[in-house]
Length: 141
Image 1 (cartoon, rainbow, N blue to C red):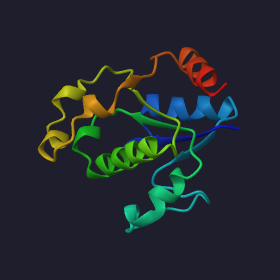
Image 2 (cartoon, rainbow, N blue to C red; image 1 turned 45 degrees about the vertical axis):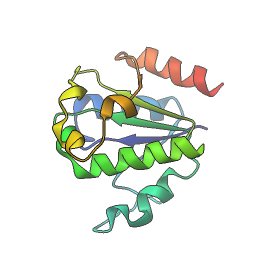
Image 3 (tube, helix red, strand yellow; image 1 turned 120 degrees about the vertical axis):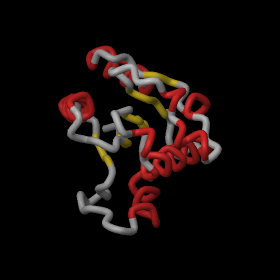
């Protein structure tokens, strides 16, 4: 069973919640912040090590773009951890899911701290969940 880490600042957003449900229905093991591998809240020390620990053994890292994603320091940190894990081979793929077509070029918060989301978020997943699941299964085969 493939392990997928979902990075989203609003897991209750309709498209984020639908993605998680669908992946679980397809037998993916879904991990998302702010929960660790045991399903416990990370608490105040959110990025002291819990995020990195949760990423261990992750096959796919998916950034779900939501309304306030660009203003979230936590999302910046998760993205940086995901990119680091991709670069070291700990994560096989890093995708982004943006069915609302939010403009990631305007994410000023990321630019002011020296991050270019367009350089880090290179592989976009299809908006339709059937196609998205097909892409993930094909890449893992």
